[in-house]
Length: 469
Image 1: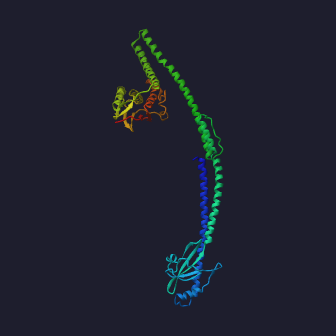
Image 2 (image 1 turned 30 degrees about the horizontal axis):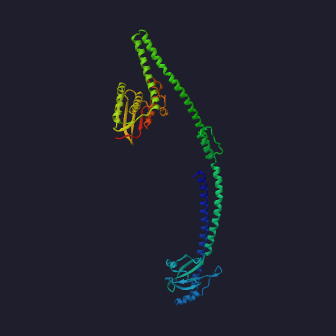
Image 3 (image 1 turned 90 degrees about the vertical axis):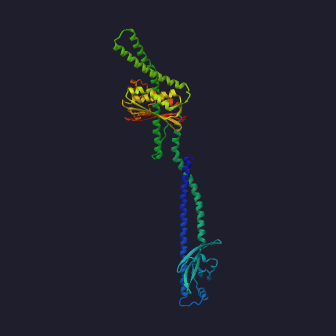
């Protein structure tokens, strides 16, 4: 259901429910007050009958029920322009005297719960009439008898029914009026939202210059202002991204050109060594320079070639025992790590995973090499593997310097290096982690990094599916 109709239905429902409850409470409250007044009149009439009957019997000795009936027959009480009807009954509900025709009222249900000097009433309805039946206990002839009287309250119930009918028609008119008003109010309230929605759709189609008018200072006005601020920021970020893409493209072209630089140096120093005799120190210095430039060129050209191959080939996945695979991968770098005073620990759980072993070994060696570069002498690198949820988890943890939080999300970008001077000095090209991420994605997995400055970094490879113990 749309927000417009939710708002419309809520306004109508709340208004109608509130008015219905208030109307019912008022009508029913008025009815209860009138009924209570009738009950008080019923009791007052009963009290007057008791008083008249007591005065009539004052100083007289009753010889039996016949004498009681004779004395009661002499009573005459007029209330509201009518002669009051009453009845005398014994404890079994048997009528001892009936004046006014109360024979149709059953005394038993009313007088059964009345004790001496108590009174009560009950409502009797039938044959289209509503009567208040009252009774009070009194002692005559040494026994308890009950004086009963009644009041006709049919008009009271008829009046309540008429009020309910009138209120029903009033509610119908109220619903119609509130419905029209709710339509208008809902439209006015949601009009700013419609403008924001239309602007958002245009932004989704690429029209990033969309803005909406702020016509109020309420929450909807704040929403419009927030939308404008968001649109402004998105437009700025898109411009920044376009500029970054342009600069990255320019950098890539420049980088391709810079490959010639180490080649020129290598060729020049080689020609220099061939052309004349040199001292041992000069030969060692030239050879070292050629070696360093060659290694840098090897790392750079090899990683560029791997990126190109990844764009052009599909790689078959085969089941590989991960315990032996990780042990072999760790041993490949162990001599270098030991020479630099770094301890390597391999903890691999035996399981089989579907991987392309050469590519995955490239990933692991890259991660281990990055850990080596970040870990000082005396540090520790841990290579672990374990099955998880039908897949396999490979982790490389180090006790190195760590990566700043603001740079952690960028370390898998091509050509991005956290410590540029150290990375270039060690033969890095800024392509290793970008390559790792693409290889892991080819395996249907994810590559994640966690790091704490001064404590170390953990790289996690989550391989999805294909693992079994």
